[in-house]
Image 1: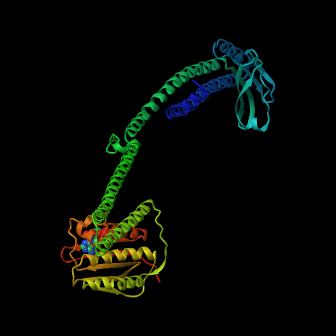
Image 2 (image 1 turned 135 degrees about the horizontal axis):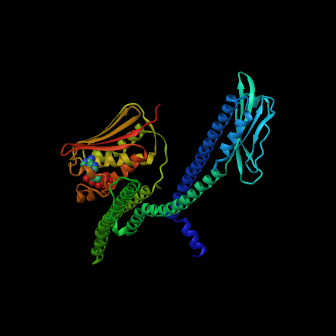
Amino acid sequence: MSLKGKIKFYRRLDVRMAFWYTITFLTTILIIFGFLDYRFQHNLLKEIDRMLIDETHEIINQILKHPLSIKEKLKSQEEIVAKRRYYPIAFQVFDHQLNLIYTCSKLPGFIFPKPSLDEKNFIIPVLKKSVKGSRKNLPFRLHTYFYREGSKLKYVVQVATELKIMRKSVENFRENLMVAFVVAFLFGSVGGWILSRKNLKPIDTLTEAIKRINANQLNERLPIQGIDDELDRLALTVNEMIERVEEYLKKLTQFTADAAHELRTPITALKGETEVLLSRKRSSEEYQEALINNLERLDYLTRLINNLLLLSQADEGKASLEFKTINLTNLLRELQEAFFLVAEQKKINLSFTGGKEIFLEGDWLRLTQLFSNLIDNAIKNTPEGGEVALELQEENKEVKIRVKDTGMGISPEDLPYIFDRFYRVDKSRSRDSGGVGLGLSICQWIVRAHQGTIEVESIPQQGTTFTVTLPILLS
Ligand SMILES: Nc1ncnc2c1ncn2[C@@H]1O[C@H](COP(=O)(O)OP(=O)(O)OP(=O)(O)O)[C@@H](O)[C@H]1O
Ligand SMILES: [Mg+2]
């Protein structure tokens, strides 16, 4: 394997996971083995100490029972302990002034330390400590016992033994632990590897499934195992994302097709009229009439292109809005005046009811565009003699602006779609009156950009009400 290949191998998730599984497993095993080793040694020593204490008491008993023949009794005790094969014993007995009464030291390499009569030793009756022998790796265990009657020291007894057998047991135990450790290491690393591969297999499956999905195959979805684990949740999130992308692409394709269609109709009309016009000589009136028609179509095209541009900028989040403190009451009053003549031509009464002056943070131009479209729609869709009313009402921290008309209304089937791009209830009529079908989509974007909402209610043949709710500045 080259160096690059090696680095790649070690960076693989399954290799890293297997590595950490093994490390964690082995660390746990090491801690457990360390604890077992400590406990094993500790318990063995405890047993040996108990044996030394028993031995000390036996010697003291002999002395106390036979104060006149201490030496003989200790001699026979020496003969008994001399027969011990595994834990040979050495002992010494002193009187209260630390004069040696008897000694039996048959432990090769071991020299009894002299007991000291310092305060501490005197108070503590039982002392235990390991004393290093002259031979390497041959420690001994010594028990010094201060026997008192009342507070008076009578005898000091020292009993020692060799720890060779115990060391052998400990070594044996450690060898077993080593074998167990090697076996655990093999099982742990192989198990860790298998486990990490098994855990990562579903990720491989997901990756393969994601690879299969491209722009032309967005109807495919990732498999869900149904156990609600992290991978299932990941697959669900990716599926939701694909759904949104699919929805967005569908809308985009539809929008492009609609836009092309909307552009084609007036251009075909422009071309047709120009061809007919050029097919023979015309009078100047005929030319003028045709040019006026074409100008109307060019106007329509210009509006269409401007609106398309605005919407695509809005989609990208690039359409700029200039927020300033504006007087909404003034804005609506100006619009009422601007549309007054158009309404009058259709014998429509355009009224405005607003209370006090209301201020909000907004873009004057865009808000004018929003309410212009709503008023324009209302006038366009209301027959002669009807009513269009603008109402302004302050509610808590919001303002509600209603554009009400007594027009033809919108059927419940059309109502959910009227904010869709290019949606017109009656296409030919709307186009005849210069409607592009983008007005309400732009209105919706403007309202959202101002943190507001737009709602519509309509009863066919009775009228429509658009309600725009915007947050206001509190005076
Ligand atoms: N007040 C209303 N009464 C009845 N129908 C309406 C009303 N307002 C809107 N509509 C319907 O909703 C459609 C969409 O309106 P929208 O403003 O988006 O498009 P438009 O007015 O046809 O064209 P544009 O505003 O882009 O020039 C209209 O074509 C019309 O059919
Ligand atoms: Mg409109």
